Image 1 (cartoon, helix red, strand yellow):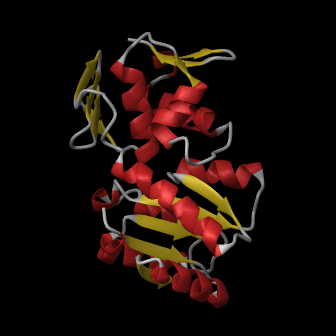
Image 2 (cartoon, rainbow, N blue to C red):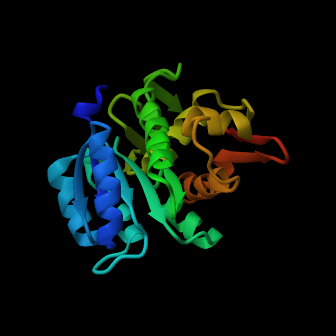
Amino acid sequence: MNKDSIKILLVDDEPDILEILSYNLTAEGYNVLTASNGLDAVKSAKEYLPHLIILDVMMPEMDGIEACGQIRLIPELKDTLIAFLTARGEDYSQLAGYEAGADDYITKPIKPKVLISKIRALLRRLSGSKSHSITELINVGDLTINRETYQVLHKGNELVLPRKEFELLSLLASKPGKVYKREEILDRVWGNEVVVGGRTIDVHIRKLREKIGNDSFKTIKGVGYKFIN
């Protein structure tokens, strides 16, 4: 994927940050659109269909977490990467972001060159997201996963899952009974180029348990998780 074909939506309510980051990303060759609040972010995302959205958390009109949740409901944006850019570093804020469907969490202040490096790593994950050696159609008990169309059926009902929940479920369900170590899950689902919090997997497993059933996932303490058929 060439840089000049990559669309990035940059959302922040601070004009100076928008100007500086937009300038640097444009100079790198990316197509950049900006928005200053959550409502405009959702509207622009629908129209622009970006590959990556960099989203501030604390904003007027609609905060970033709510905007992320709204964006994740748009089918055309199921493959879009979302990274939060915020000065808030509390665990609850990060967990709320991941639960809303974020792919990464970047803390301000951040130097433009460091942000560009993070963006490159995120986009590598996007280009390699379909390279996992997992069959496109997975049937396990009451669960059917179609990786090609990003559809999940559970007991005949379609589930709408955020991108990372879908990737995590696909990985675990591809080999029921196999214990996936936490390191392997982070590598396969989030990519080893980007550092995410150790609780990220736990948050996503908890959300999947709520939607599919607690008995479908078994925690192997100190090791990782496995899917139970």
